[in-house]
Length: 323
Ligand SMILES: O=c1nc2n(C[C@H](O)[C@H](O)[C@H](O)CO)c3cc(O)ccc3cc-2c(=O)[nH]1
Ligand SMILES: C[C@H]1O[C@@H](n2cnc3c(N)ncnc32)[C@H](O)[C@@H]1O
Ligand code: SF4
Image 1 (spheres, protein in one colour):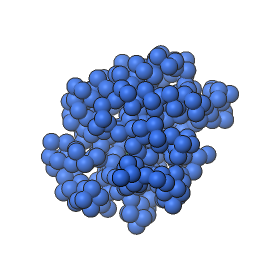
Image 2 (spheres, rainbow, N blue to C red):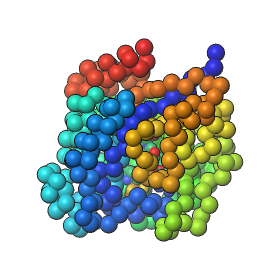
Image 3 (cartoon, rainbow, N blue to C red):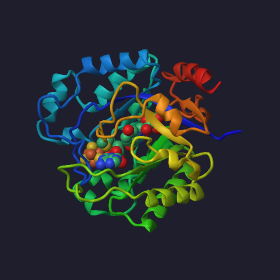
């Protein structure tokens, strides 16, 4: 029997590019300016297209704490919401109404903010990136490893099915990668909420501080996947983005998932790397049993982990997807 490899069919909704951090590797962040909030009409149109293409996940990923950037309030208020979290809540409800499960990565949120979003999100995410203190994060208070681990613990206390991961090649050492994976394992041992760990390679972006730094080598990716397979508990999925690395050559190293893939939207964080079409994905996973999954893994599709507002949809989709 070939081993199963999963992926999620999603639409990517970058509600805003405005961000209070300034990571040395990021080209997603943009200044406060006209158009810095994705209009609701565009969100709704994208959601509708996603629904038509059979997408089950609405991935809301955006800049962290945009309200801390001078002038942002005016734009979010003009869109009809007091803050980005209220906007995300409303758009999550719209996704649910169209039959898609919301998954949000908004950067750092407080316990109370996580609790608010939990009502309308099937799962949430935050990349740990690394437990190391690195120059690329010196203008990003939200990338302090202590702050990130604390938010992930809060998500555990709130029983939110959670996605995290490592960003490779941003100035961390091999020992840092091992420490980062061990920290994720410890969180999961305590709370049981880590459903998947993304092993993502940094891709240099023109115009950023790290433009001249080469991306993580295939050898570093392979070494980290071996470490992950050894350190992470077996019930935690190991994800590799199929548009960033030579995923096909890495699957044999314990990879179990190819992450979110969209037939509708681009990867707004790595726009120069298009998603493979679904038939190309099948080629990447040749020799494996490629299957679609939801943003919430089957072991979490129950009232302990899913809010009452989402449970009927989650159960209906789970029945169809997981059998
Ligand atoms: O929960 C997350 N999902 C991230 N995803 C989404 C992920 O692939 C899936 O949506 C999740 O596995 C949930 O199904 C990304 C997708 C990209 O194209 C690029 C970057 C990311 C980064 C994250 C992330 O930081 N957190
Ligand atoms: C949403 C996630 O996207 C990742 N991210 C941000 N910038 C880059 C880049 N240049 N290359 C690859 N991944 C990146 C970070 O890990 C962040 O947490
Ligand atoms: S990676 Fe996320 S936190 Fe860092 S600057 Fe980009 S949008 Fe902001």
